[in-house]
Image (tube, rainbow, N blue to C red):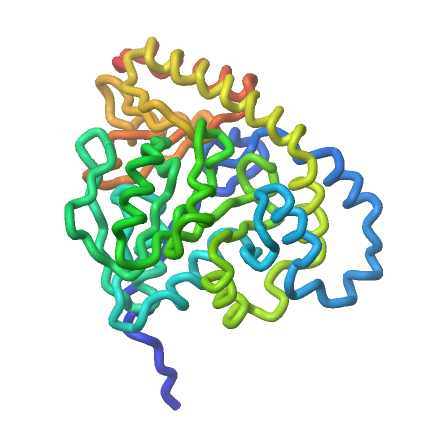
Length: 351
């Protein structure tokens, strides 16, 4: 008996998600919203008919897509809903590139992109960001798919909309603009889908809508491109429970916006507090900050905070190893974080 494993899987370096430890930890490492979802979500859960769980969910997410279409001023056929954005991204590399194709992305950016390319055995064409993680794409750059996270992760930087538009307009391939964090930003690129035939925009309910545990994300784009997702998706890719509560969250824009404003206010406070400690803090347009500790290794700060039961994200590597990504928590959680950093400073290390 011989079991065949694809070579690309045997050598694959898989994606490493943020640590999920016990409730005694303060989680500032996975960019979840620190506030609960809309009260309408709670009510929907309380009133849910459990007997309906014996039935398959709507395979096309029709009611949810109509709510999304109303929000964004587009048609339901321009929307595909996935089991989190990761499913949408995975389907994208299966649809929009041949086996000899190429996948482009910024470096550093969302570390799942190269993993998805490796799973399919596609050639990777990363584009190195500038010394301050600024936008720089060489003239004549080509790939079949280009993943652009905007605001970017892990840096939180937002790339100029006009510059991004010109890139998309010239690009001879598909640009997938991952706007998972865009509700915390001052601008967005959603209107590109009405102007350009080679752009798909992604949105997530995991961040601003406080539904990371429900796993719902969606793609918006020209209906012709969106139609291909339906050809290869799992039959019932979004469960009934998630469809119901996602629709409730989408409808309650006032509640979501209020949470976003609270996160932005705390983001500014944390940025200023770390800057006063001498940290280099990048201007974030997301629900996290990207910062370099002063006079000490980022890995050392990460380990100390972990001992204090505070989780932040550390990415080893030549471009990222000097920095920490810190998700925005509640004001109380951020106060505990800053207290821990002051405690570390009192040990004799320069922050």
